[in-house]
Length: 106
Ligand SMILES: [Fe+2]
Image 1 (tube, rainbow, N blue to C red):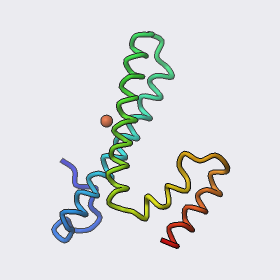
Image 2 (image 1 turned 180 degrees about the horizontal axis):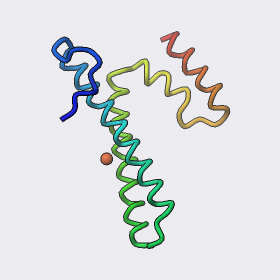
Image 3 (image 1 turned 120 degrees about the horizontal axis):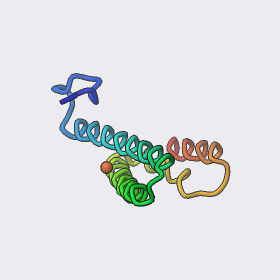
Image 4 (image 1 turned 90 degrees about the horizontal axis):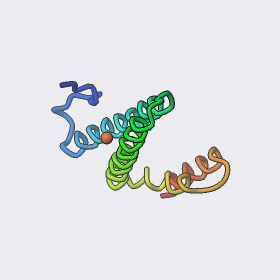
């Protein structure tokens, strides 16, 4: 079992911070799984195998979303930043700047 998610001694971290760290690792693992399925789907020739992988990737979207929502509930300033960026039309970099400004004002 790896404990690489900790950059500080685990014994000095609160239970809340350790849970946060585990969920960050989980989020990155879900993103990796989405990426791996994306690549497999792109090269798979068998229609049924491809459909199964697409179904599995959809599950990873859900897992990623649940992990992210958990983290955002515990880090409101992160939510504030993302509220300016996600599900918006327009230039992503400009939205990022707005998100940063909103977080600074919060
Ligand atoms: Fe998953």
